[in-house]
Amino acid sequence: MDFPFFMVFAVPILAVWTSFAFVWISKPKDKKNIKLLLAFSGAFLLALTFFELLPEVYENQKPKTIAVFILAGILLQIFLEFFSKGAEHGHVHLDLEKNKFPFLLFLSLSIHALIEGIPIHGDNSILYGILIHKIPVAVILSIFLINSKLKTSSVVLFITAFSIMTPIGSYLAQSAWIEAYAPIFTALAIGVFLHVSTIILFESSQGHSFNLQKLLVIILGVGIAYYL
Image 1 (cartoon, helix red, strand yellow):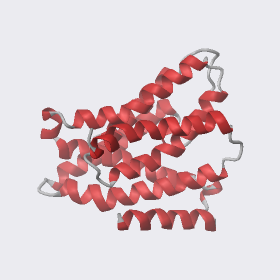
Image 2 (cartoon, rainbow, N blue to C red; image 1 turned 90 degrees about the vertical axis):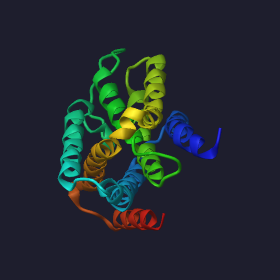
Image 3 (cartoon, rainbow, N blue to C red; image 1 turned 90 degrees about the horizontal axis):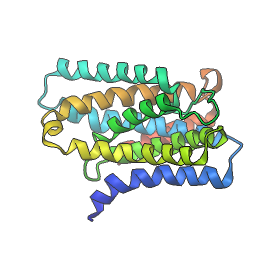
């Protein structure tokens, strides 16, 4: 197994499971640091989308066609959030019945994670953006699942399936059919990233106001993305 293969397929899985293990062991109560990491991840992913994906997807393509699919990605993410209740950007507002598997939450998060994997190839910078995005989301999702009334086996099943969706998306992106329409699928992913990252930035502060700490981590996220 070469290094790029490990990065693309194994590291996203490790990111989810490391986040889950952290929550399982430490049972964090203070979410302030998680919110700061979430704000950093939103800025980092948004900046990488502008610096890396947008210039690449418009190259030698019809601009209006690409714009249509970017908008379609935004609309798709809005639709998915009807069922996930905002879990993709760090909010889970569900009241689970005892032992009832949250199938709609799982399905919407799986589609989101699958689309995330499409633009990843080799060791391109967008991989790091998705990893940084995944960690705080996985932490918040893990807190929700562990504190829910679900059986442990159901929680483990959820995390296992969720963790492999992004690598599956990267694997499918290498197929001849998706590769032939790569700009269209990348544009769809860009729309998803734009919606999620901007919502994270607006929701990362109480009352939509930014304090100094959040402003600094956002500037840091954009700065690191620029120099990658």
